[in-house]
Structures are given as structure tokens and as C-alpha cells.
Image (cartoon, rainbow, N blue to C red):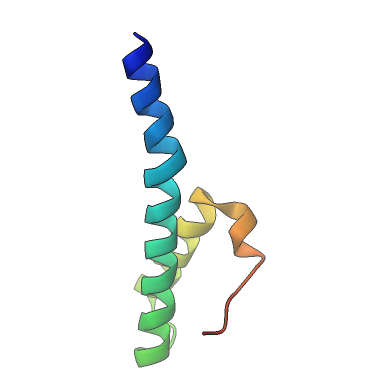
Length: 61
């Protein structure tokens, strides 16, 4: 029972932020190459849903 809770916590604490960061980076890369597309917008919105506090901050590197 406790092991299951620890596994759930690990997923929420590690995997979800990494997935959001990956989606955001992929979105920015696609927009840099091809301009704004439907796919890049969906990736950006998905990252915003996973980590909304990171949507306010945008890095320019």
C-alpha cells in the first residue's frame, strides 16, 4: 500500500514535470523551424495544462 503511494508520488513529482518540459521544448523547436502550427499549439497547451505556473515564464535560449 505504501509502495503504491510512493510510486504515485514519484510519477507526479518527476515524470509529469519532465513531460511538460519536453512538450514545451518540442513546441518551441517546431515553432522556430516552421512557425506556429496546430501541432505546436497543442503541445504548448498540453504543457500549460500539466504545469500552468511555468506558462507565465518563457525562456529565450
